[in-house]
Amino acid sequence: MTIDFKDKVAIVTGAGGGLGREYALELAKRGAKVVVNDLGGTRDGTGHSDAALKVVEEIEAAGGTAMSNGSSVTEYDQMEKMVADAKQKWGGVHILINNAGVLRDKTYAKMSPEDFEFVLKVHLTGSAFATKACWETMREQAYGRILMTASSTGLFGNFGQANYGAAKLGLAGLTKTLQLEGAKYNIRVNTLSPVAGTRMTEDLFPEEAFKLFDPVNVVPAALFLVSEDSPTNAIVGAGAGGYHSAWVMMNDAVWLKEEERTVEGFAANWEEISAQNNLRAPNSGSEQSGAILTAMQKVLGKD
Ligand code: NAD
Image: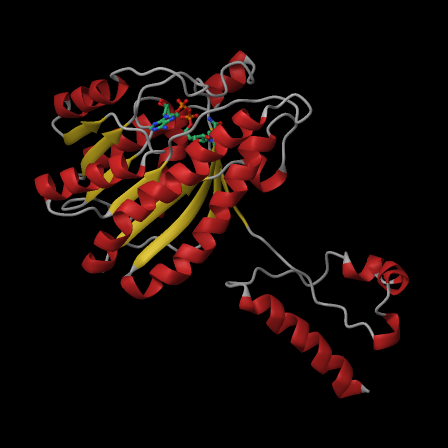
């Protein structure tokens, strides 16, 4: 089975280097026309360069088709223009990989409100803006594949990355609602949690790990998640050569009798309420209330 992207137009944000560049190169190699977006800043989001243009040159030298876009994902009007340019040139937008990102790591005690807000703006608002700019086109086409880039920090936490973690878990939340709203228009939305040796991690990984976590190894997961037969609402981890899934899960609700519904009653039942038994991953928020009602019915049925 060969997975190709012929007749597909793909936008990859932050594709001037690191993971985004690898996605853009492989999409183009497999036939997609690729918008290489990147404002070409430093790791903390300051400055500009022609990083996107260089990747376009690489793609064209290899016989592929691409256009560069140097705008910031944080500017909604620029995202709208990026989509309009792609549509004008190539007639649509089928794939969006939200990959642009910055780091401003500090312990929460030392993190300024500005650094908190800025990191959320690039990752969370930027991905929401790029997605919003494509959304109507994808609905009209009845075809869209969108990938959000989360991280292990967002899913599980990491010391010194409160801003980044909040933004990254926010992206998993954005995925969960958009995949519901997009379903009837054949728009599928997934979340990727990569691990890769890039400039983002160069001072975090020891040299050997940096080499082991070559970003090319994330490409198979990313491209499958934006392919025709992609799943939707998946959270996938990828790095080095290891691939896994992750879920937001819940256990069975514990139904407390009316007289137990006190702080002390809750405390007395905490062990059962927090037990990792019968875990499952609901597909929508309404399944949470459904599970609570199931617990009630079980108890009332027995009483
Ligand atoms: P990277 O720094 O090489 O790539 C990020 C790119 O985003 C840069 O080229 C940068 O110029 C661009 N960018 C930043 N702000 C932008 C903006 N406002 N508009 C457009 N482009 C912008 O780092 P990377 O490791 O390739 O990261 C890619 C994505 O993967 C990021 O979202 C990052 O948070 C995520 N991620 C990476 C790792 C890892 O281990 N490298 C782990 C988890 C998540």
